[in-house]
Amino acid sequence: MSRRHTMAGLSRLAAAAAVTTMLLAACGGDDEGGTTATGGAGTQAADLGLVQNGTLTVCSDVPYPPFEIESPDAPSGYSGFDMDLMQAIADGLGLRMTVQDVGFDPLQSGAVLAAGQCDLGASAMTITDERKQHLDFSMPYYDSLQSLLVPADSGITSIDDLVGKTVGVQQGTTGEIYAKEHLPKGANPPQAFPSDGELWPALQAGNIAAILQDLPVNLEHARSDPAYEVVEQYETDEQYGFAFAKGEKTALLNAVNEQLQALRDDGTYDEIYARYFAMDSTGTESPTGPSPSTS
Image 1 (cartoon, rainbow, N blue to C red):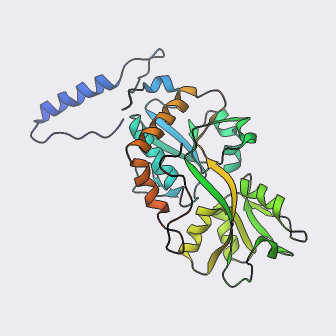
Image 2 (tube, helix red, strand yellow):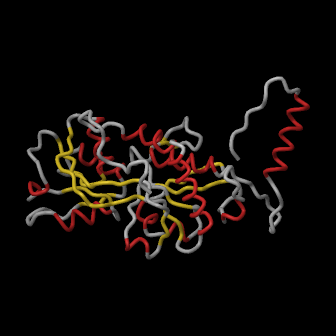
Image 3 (cartoon, rainbow, N blue to C red):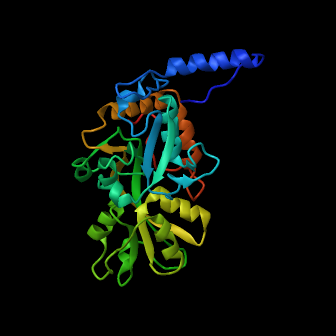
């Protein structure tokens, strides 16, 4: 349920009566003896096939800044572009949001979703034809590029300079696919890591020569440490979507799409976007991310 504010001046008895009235309005019996929470958009949560009544359970691979970041002060314990956007969607549906940290590979393969571990995946996941075979996707909510991050003093200025060197990628990602298809002859095979949480320290330790992955994540590293820089960006026409178990969450998918469109229409999407992508590492407006009218 969404947060409620008690009017000043109500007696404790009146406040209790008001809360009781709201609870009765928000909940009703379902066919299995549980409760049905009614979202702010007029959607009954029981009709959404949620893992847990009244709760939107989100699976994500954390950390992946600026999309997924551990944040104890956030309602779910996580912030970032994906998490803030998903929190706004949950609020619009009148649902509490919880997050489960899972590996990206079992998430993009659809395994954790098919197993009913969570209601959807929010993890900067690119919509691809291959993934559509085992996942359903929301409308696109972010446009991305691939990029190459290297130490500023490495002498590497492009992917062609990786001859005899090893680039790090995240396992199961479009960055890994791009690296395999575009590395020059003589480069070592890309080294795959479970997540950015292992990739970034490997570059810092000198165990790999570069990272090839989503531009916003590499820009975040370059912002945090000027000893590293993004030297190339690759146009890949990628768009992110929230992922759902194939053919099993149609009502929830439609409800999420409705909320996404509402967030664009009322300007909330713009506000969340500006928190994370207003500037790139050079201090100019970030070229990534869709315009507010993109859907």
